[in-house]
Image (cartoon, rainbow, N blue to C red):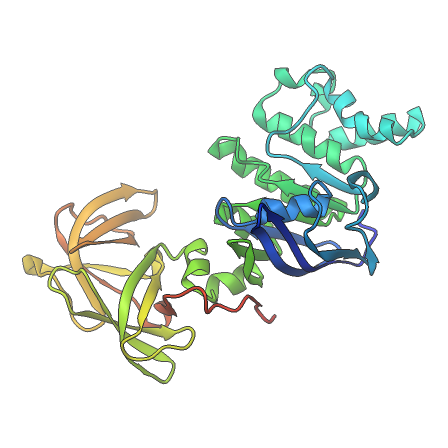
Length: 374
């Protein structure tokens, strides 16, 4: 369906009242890609999408489609489809009339409109609901109508702004699968805004992690999952344990750090140094819960051996084949996963392989936005 080779954003920015909501966005999107813009509320991801759609004019920069500048065009001349968080359906029109609306505005022949509407409704598996009003549909079904309305226009690019945030957990999973299926079967090019890292990892070919209006890192899901450039990106990629620490020494790409606030103090860990750092520097240590090994500690000691942390189990959550465990050590709560549930109140020791412990400079100001090499 996509009829272009590349969409390029050059130094794209948007300012509101003297504050940059988006600054210096450089990104090339290739035909057929699924790109997710990921970050917390206020990071600039929706602003970027609205600038692409033409709903917000640029303060600076350019947007080019196959070399042709399009940021000066009105939204209706860009040929993009948009799926909103709120669905934005006409409540007084049936499913088929909602889907047909854009085609009617284009003045297409009635026979072509009917054919394309039937095909789009069938694609989202709503054939038996075609005559219903939006109010007679579930949230997931309404979102399918919004998607059908976007793809029926055969757009060169589909823009989705947190389309699943209003759905319950089960529907979110179902619609994730549906969106990916439609993207692949129709050969769409999709830009998808979300704050949910699981959603982004499962859907996207590439992720763009944003912070305060700027890109922090671009790469495939596995590249960002394995090689985050900062503790901020690591936090979005599932490193739930983000711990302040001080560097003791650095050698051969590994850093020995000391964690504050533990029960007896002086707990040291060794991890991979990501970025420039030296002895005495403040850093953040990132460890995924699943990378901790959990072992019971006889006698209830408060610190483990070299490269380990000991604390008291404060909470155990059943997650099917494994348990999520919260371990309190001094002022710090650590999160781990284990197949065997420890006793609440019991002492455990947590250890993690050096290669799974990432050490980042504390300051994010020094982070250079980058794209991970393929």
